[in-house]
Length: 145
Image (cartoon, rainbow, N blue to C red; front, side, top):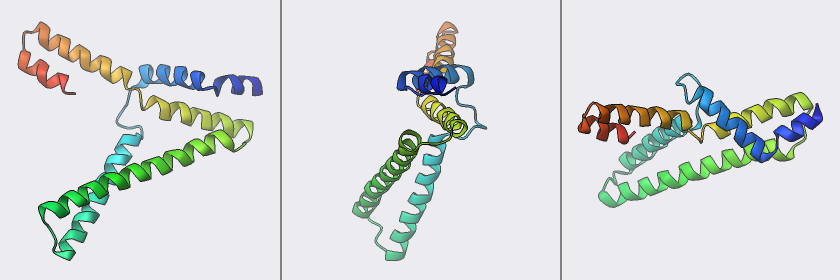
């Protein structure tokens, strides 16, 4: 059993399994997705920064840009720290075999969320269909997806 785990936990195996998972599932709405969490965090941090600017009564073009840059830096920093911790936990801490398999499945899922192959194929089909129907404007809109 440990040999199977060793084989499956290699980076190329994780990528292959993630690719297969993405082709089968895609990114369904009901499944937690890191990008949705990042979007939620952006909304919260933006509201927080805007409230600070209101309290300080310093809303200007320059302060809005500074707050926007600060928002980007905070989101990038938090995302890096969280995923660094997750990667470190998966890679360097030794767990029981069962826990290791569960963590491996989580790593495969997280990797699959970065691929979006099924979504890209679906979007390409929508564009091709719009072009076949000679609806150029609809095709342009669908390319933007």
